[in-house]
Image (cartoon, rainbow, N blue to C red; front, side, top):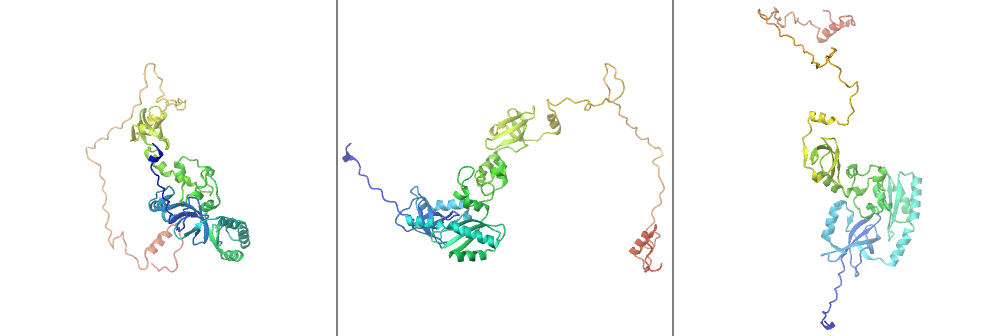
Length: 413
């Protein structure tokens, strides 16, 4: 085959320049999809100059969006919106209110470096004013953008702070727009933390956008140690990574029998004492020999057996290795009679009372006078005296036996 017979290779068409870029910007690692009308296609990780509500600032290109997502550096908008919906929805810090001005040049890098060098002055001035005004707040970080239109001060406080005077002094000192933003412990770690105990960057600073609360049940279910120093992150709260495998652990846990339930194994019936989620093993205490065995979950013959009866439970409580009863535990002899060799003690006779004798004359009767009727004028219900009510009768009963003398305003009887 000669070179003349080889097919002529056609030049590859140039990739179209995207009309929008997905960028990440700011100390809080916010995301946005901004319009782009440049002539050069920026790659992932490139620095661009964007304009947002805060002003002009630098941003990092994450990916590009197009209609088909043909290359490895672009995704479809439908996939991006699906990812945002699964990552927090409306809580996800995503915006489209902005524009990509240009790809960053060396002059933009120099200017950003000069502005970053002024951070120490901003921090020192703000801390001094906080001490002078005795404000209950702690300064965390100061963010300066490329255009210098605004300076953001991140602070922590357990109470509501009136910082209007502080903003006025800072605006007069630096001649720029001042924004004070209150953050919590987890947002503080997002701003200043670097690496975690696993050796990786903190999830909140690297990619995690929505910080959802985590309960202690996730740590207990994953068999993690309950030492606060080992399950807490840089923020002092439970590690965010405990949520990553919580759903998997929950699915595996549902496949295992409950603790204390009755199961049947190849060696006999027993009670579940412990379960191991990842290995799917079950520790069973057998009834026949009181031995604990580890059985795979799929090797269980039968589950959820009925509970033991009282007599079976008592038999299982008697162990073969239990100590012999001592002299005090032995039952005393039922009788004090001397035992004749070759005979066995008989149980004591139970006395049974004889049945009552029948009376030929019939049951004994007693004449009882019928009760007298209690009418309005009967002797058992004498007519009420004028001026004496229930209170007067109660006072007379109380005076019997040496009570207090009757009151003087009582009417004569």
